[in-house]
Length: 408
Image (cartoon, rainbow, N blue to C red; front, side, top):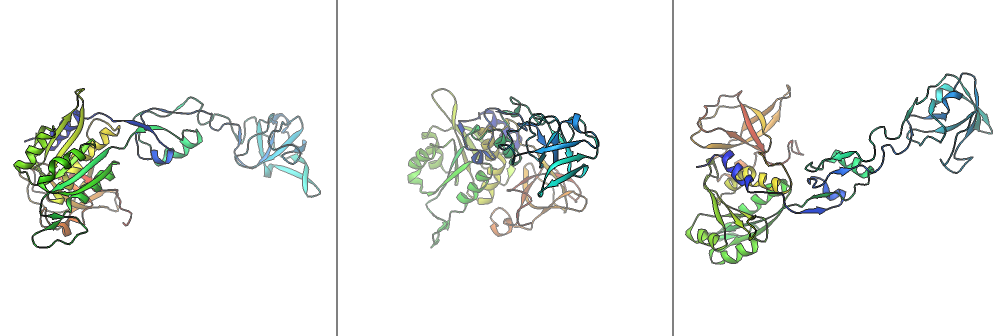
């Protein structure tokens, strides 16, 4: 049976980035660039005042020199040129008038009012060329690469892209994921489970991490075994299909009829060991669909989706081909040794006063204890045949959603 790392590698080896699309800058947040973003103007696009004062020629900035004040009230806006023995009042960020090459701070100049407005100013301290101004192109020049293809658009990039007119970047499209559960005994989450029926909790549980990884996910609900062929035909319009249900001969035959070629049968993780993975190969020989069959337990399905489906989503959306970077934390509590499987143990996370990330196992009673599991913020990945864990060890953790949570 494959390890988690081996299974992830086999899945990602069969994945290539999908379609690209031109999107608005707001929609691009979180997506991966398919083409480089390039500056189209200098930044700043003109010489700019670094502080409030008077723009002037540095050669005129000698002590006791008197300068005539010109400005927007004398000319049309900042289509203004400073001549010898002239100055213009500017505030922080204003364009520097043509001919000026420095800004003298307001407290280093003495205005001589004329009916309330200074018409003449006297220089109190000398000024050097380039002083108190930000020259055109100080931060970047037109043609500079703002972000390479393959970079994820982060919040901090939005202002830069907007300033450079990069308002419709070309990104990899969000991948679609189709999710459904199999079982004649299941009803929807909004229906009352009567007799021996139960609500389909696995569908919503799997959709959540898919959305967190940036996909668009569609829960097709609970499907009776007699309707499997139609359900698979509908689901296989999406690049990724996740089916939750017991492994029955009916389900296995339906997957084969749908053209799913088995690749992985079981992964050495707990919970989620009984998962399978296959692909549908198109006429060109390219993998067109990735199909996961997960256990019906919502906790097991969430575990496999977070650890295997999520990295696949990232890759199809232009992310790196390798495994996602590991997040590590300090284990805080005793725990029994693991067996020959990797154990995904639900934990809470906390940063202590020494800036260490701490992982504390929650008290829950196995893969069917939804109430206990609901407190989990991450999965701690305990290596096979390791332990006992006493506290103080470094463990790898996979957060279940943004961390720290907004309500922490």
